[in-house]
Image (cartoon, rainbow, N blue to C red; front, side, top):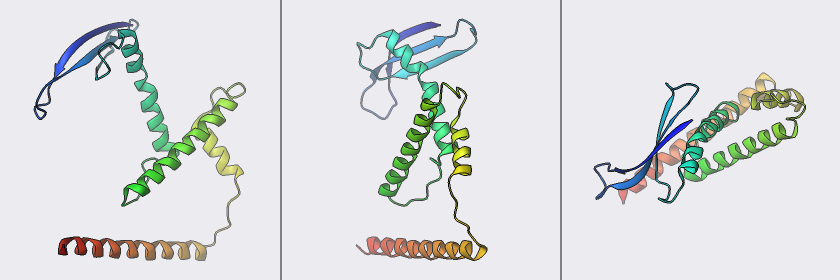
Length: 164
């Protein structure tokens, strides 16, 4: 891999002054057409080696986010307040940690074990409640009542804030 590093001044036009950042350009020796560019606000004394390493870690961050969205529902939240969002994200992170621990524990015997594999095995092994159509309809009715109550509460709060 070849790495180019320069300190560059970046100004977004909104802030009163420009900031000096690191520009890191990486090119793969095996695939010279593959060039990756990054800007970093890391401290000035950060080594080029460290900056290149951090740029390379982006793949793993993106992969983790993709797994969180597809396997443990990171993007499937329906909340109105920050506290609910934080609770949802905490549950997502705990689920990811669980999946990671299972994969680490079994990596010797199952080196290709994925988060999806673990999730599918759990869906088979964990007991499920026998749900009848009536149970499902009752649960849906409860959700609808809660949703209607939340909507009414939201409207009341909006009216109260407009009256102030």
